[in-house]
Length: 246
Image (cartoon, rainbow, N blue to C red; front, side, top):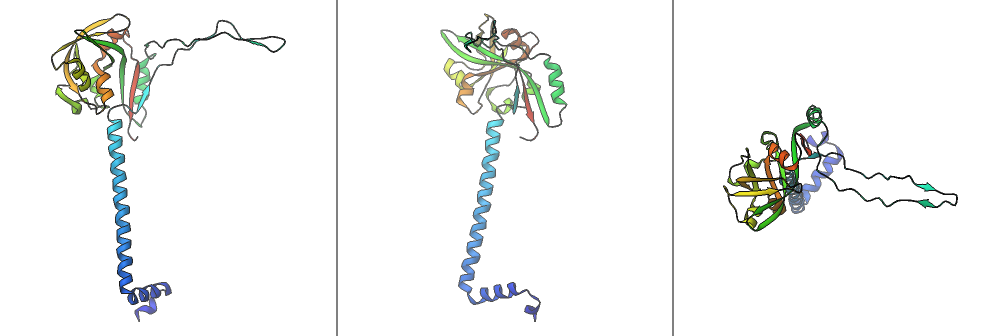
């Protein structure tokens, strides 16, 4: 009587499953294995994606705002003669100097007002040379405000020795740079820039960003210290931005 209320497709399916019991077991087992593989692959890909985003985006900002690059303008216009010959001058691209973002405080305030933006941190960064005895090494100096920048890159979680303080004349360096220079927490480094400015800084902490190149080159100091060292009084070379949803 129950089958009278079932659709024709259900009646055929139930009869098929009852008659071929061993085949039914194989079908159910195959479907279960297939569903299990799909669930496993979905979980694996989701875990890989989360781990990739965490490893890559936890060591840098999502968006970096930079000042416009300098361009070379020709001193004479292009002349087209009667026989369509073109006279052009050789234009050499200029060297890109370290310069500040114009009115960066207003730009940062405008960006922070956007609903999808989580953190905006000013950075005064540039290339420098670190000297320790007879050894010198090219580095990238990043002057930051810890309260803001540590919300983008959690330096506290990446410190392996010392502390994450960068007050006054303190500096944070990577593990590879510390190994190359043979220094540790408490040692002093002489930092010099291309403009001739120098500063002696004390190592307050050593970090590991999970990347050999970054650990060998990146350093962090206080924003005002970097502004004086790089010749950017009151200016910043970039605005680091993180968004709520990558």
